[in-house]
Image (cartoon, rainbow, N blue to C red; front, side, top):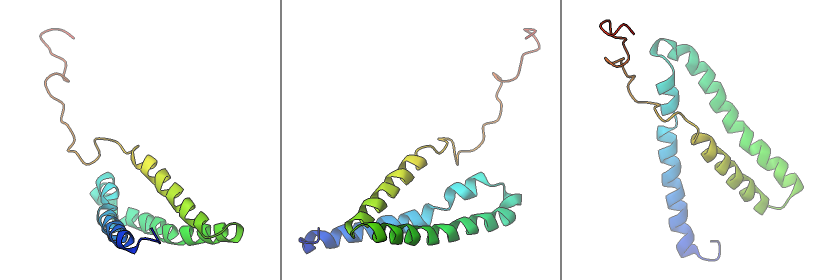
Length: 114
């Protein structure tokens, strides 16, 4: 869209809005999976993961720039986004839903002898 600035500006604004929303809800799976009593210890692990995530992309992109031209960085970024999207599709579908308590169907009946 470099040749069409009237189209590039709205696309960049849409991308910025998407990034802000991802940043806002990105911690949600972590908070839903970790037990409340373990959050203090696991926050250290999670912050280490976030620090590595800030360092890894510039390192990968600099290695790509050593070997290829600038458009290859955008191709690598797009491939990384597709990989992240496919990984996010593997989250458990019940993540964040309240745990189901066993109902009468889950408890064996004494009268039937099962």
